[in-house]
Image (cartoon, rainbow, N blue to C red; front, side):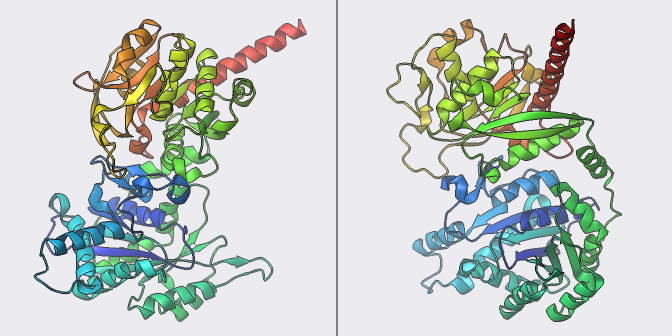
Length: 555
């Protein structure tokens, strides 16, 4: 399709009533449907908070920080975008109020406004509109830009973004702009019926600031009847056929299929007069079949400190879904609170686990429990994948219990340790600012050919995304490798250790980077795929051993 500058079409996704209705999944699903019809699509997220990015925010407040190839620390919805449309995004795809105001204030300090009084309108809104247009023109231009506005209609902090997209609607015209509003239609148990009033009030509030939605996505736990759709359409000034049911599902990857069945992609194409092909979702349908009807199952333990907030590990959860698809298995995740794991309890907590993953994280809380979990899986030959801090824990455990380096530790936790096997990176030593100063983004890594990771990737040079300040201390390379640790992934100059493995273990891999960030629904990340494969093998061997034991008892 030939891109014509100035002819980009814009879709704006807003939300009402309550947060966490699923605007990110809805935007991702729309992007997937349009891309599957041959259109060039780009997606961006606007977050109303004043933080420049989520990098310094507690996971309990914000969930996972999703890191892009260019080093941007972004909202977790960017992960959904990348997974659904299968494209690597950039820092232009996630903007915060903090970034917008910082850009405007910086320009004002340099005299960029020629003495004008700087105001929300037009200066802040113009900056926002420029950022929307920028993603439409990237890489030679796209056909459609989908912009998700974070928060809910009525939030004070969202108003500049809503005003900006209202102006975009005027400037570009109805043939190039489409407003989609996601709202809630709750089912009241005591009344035994769905209630449309929250949706009516949400749309009323949106219309009061000058935006008339073209399509309503109604999040619901119960199917919407024709009468309910007609009622919503009548009171919200939307055609009944543009009231789309967004019913709860067990798997997020089912959402685009259901949206298509509701006719959402056809509505969008007709409204924006998009020239495109027919929808082809064969690969997606095959994936869904394997998710719903797997032939095997396996249990993976995730040992961390944010285990009661699953959004902190969102990309890891999805990566295991993808890995399960490629192994035709249902991956059952067992959440293990690292603070509950000790030398005495590790065996009981982990005895029924087929594989263990320790994710990234910061700080000392729960770290001794993670180290004990590593000891258990190393000694009992349980398949293991360590990510970032999970690699640090693996190195510390090996140093203490195999190399007899008592009190070995990571410098992050104990700066007085005599054996800092994990140490602050040299270029991080004089940094005082916390935000955006870590080793961030994609970096190359060279794999040793005689290794589990080379077997997984099938290539010698890879690129993975990082987010850390601490690394393997080169001073301890010799003592650790002589004891049986393999350094199977190094930076191209050989200076940084990116991957370690153990020689006397069937599948023990720990990496400095975050592989979960590059896993996709129809193409699982090689390390997650092979961890699940090893866990299935381990599960089978345990079942065989148990059967043998029962036979011996009978005899």
